[in-house]
Length: 140
Image: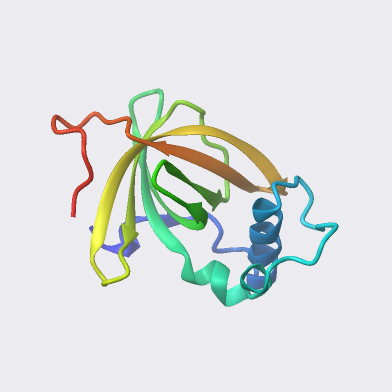
C-alpha cells in the first residue's frame, strides 16, 4: 500500500503541537507542559515528524481503518504512538515500521489503552504478539 492510502489524523496540527504532545507522551503526563526539561529529541518538531509509522486497525464492529501515526516509543514488546482520535482498547492492529536498513516490517498487535494528551491528540500503547495471521509473526 501507498502512504496516501493511510489517513494522517494529526495533519491539521502544527509541528509545535505535535512536538508538545510527543513531549507529554514521553513524560507520561496528560498535560503538554512537563515539569522538567524534556530531552532534546522531544523538543525538536522534526523528531515528531520523522517517527511516522503506518497502522491498520481492525475495529470492534468489523471495519478496518488505516492511519499514519507518530511513534513515541518502540521496544521488543510494543510501542506507543500519537493519533488524532479515539481507538478502542482491545482492537487488533498491524503496525508497519521502517527498519534501520530501510526495509519495512509489519508487526501484529493489540491496542492496550490510550489517554487524551490535548484536544483530539491521544497517546496509545500497542502490545505486540496478538495476531489473526496463521503464522502469528512479523512480516518483512
